[in-house]
Image 1 (cartoon, rainbow, N blue to C red):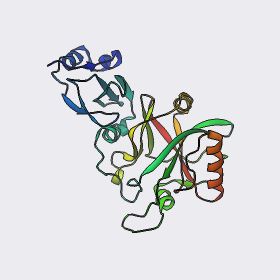
Image 2 (cartoon, rainbow, N blue to C red):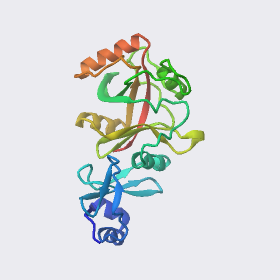
Image 3 (cartoon, rainbow, N blue to C red):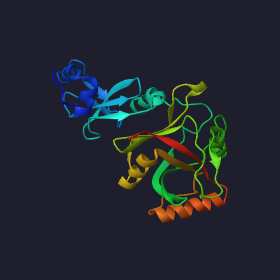
Image 4 (cartoon, helix red, strand yellow):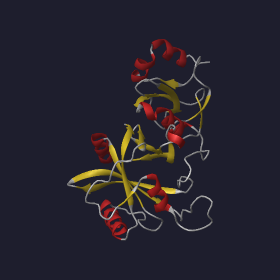
Length: 258
């Protein structure tokens, strides 16, 4: 049975005309799938579906998405991150992530531009909606100590970019934020430390800055430190206050995807 699939010219060029035609004819395309963008069920026999090809240096993985979520496209991903990245945005939320990190908490993520050393840097501000206890403990807020154990550094002020954090990255696809990835256990493939229930929209200026620098500043503070700020100047003031109070950690992460 034919499928309501869209195979973009870029995807067709990567997989070849023969494979693309088989997909369109329904030979190799699944009827039901989990959308690689929003992770809700889809049916390529009943609704417009996009083919999304994740491409590394040596590996390529084909996924499917609602056409209303993202268009058919090729998404470049670093080879060493490909398997973990694809797993993090296609697998259902099963709580699998490295031990000792606060990935089980409900994390609020806000995107914004932060002025550092005279340049606007793309930033993600992470703040839990409640205190984060250490795994196995009943109480206490261990959000910052847990992140420090992962390699995030305390920020006394925002005058300089923080150090890079090896093995971590920010996954952007079709101009939308999908996940923050951390190294897998025992150096395995990356897993999602945070992943969007639905892709997070970012502004054109944020995406442009991220694509230009290929890095994202990730700032994290305990619950009640930042709040939802309606303007970037107010966000910066809240960040400066949290830093001055010793309630802010940060790292610079590479950008994966586009």
